[in-house]
Length: 110
Length: 114
Image 1 (tube, each protein chain N blue to C red):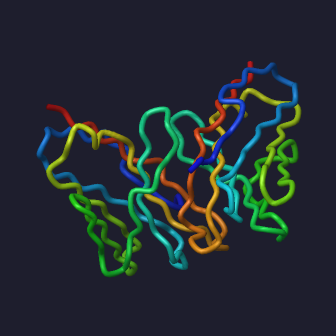
Image 2 (image 1 turned 135 degrees about the vertical axis):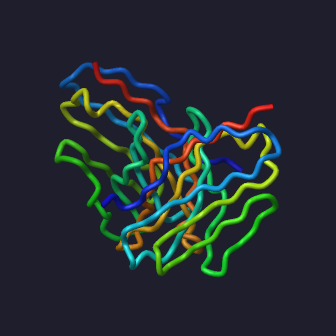
């Protein structure tokens, strides 16, 4: 089983749609969880951390289910500018680095 | 302020040659990471430096890869006897001691081995 697995997509949605991405991770000892965003031919940038209680940042909601080792990202009212690849990220066992999923590609069209 | 910078931005080399990639982290960041991203693949952890501690080299794919960090700041990643499968984007990231897992990435070096 890969350490972090994501559906690669692409997810093609119209502006204003709500879209959800899911991710599973294999290491039950992971303590830190994130969603990063990567635009085409650009470096990844932190979108938001994911907390056990769930957290929201504007149109973005992240949730963590430790029992199922599952992380989700919900984007409401999609904008054209949300088009990007969304990377699910957990810390490694040593806590020294981040393990990235391959990403889920989102394309928002008008 | 200035972000993480990397040089060169692009590098084309011939198989068998050595290459050096440079990373300048954000000033004051104690942790520095190297990753690589091959076409269509996720980011792969290579090496991690934290202050004066011994680096975590567990992600280096072979002994042709090495990295050093001088003076706790600038880092160089060296790939000896490059192979075509080394072609990838090499990304450097840094993070502050107080928020070690919030990593700020540089723009990367695109390496093409012919």
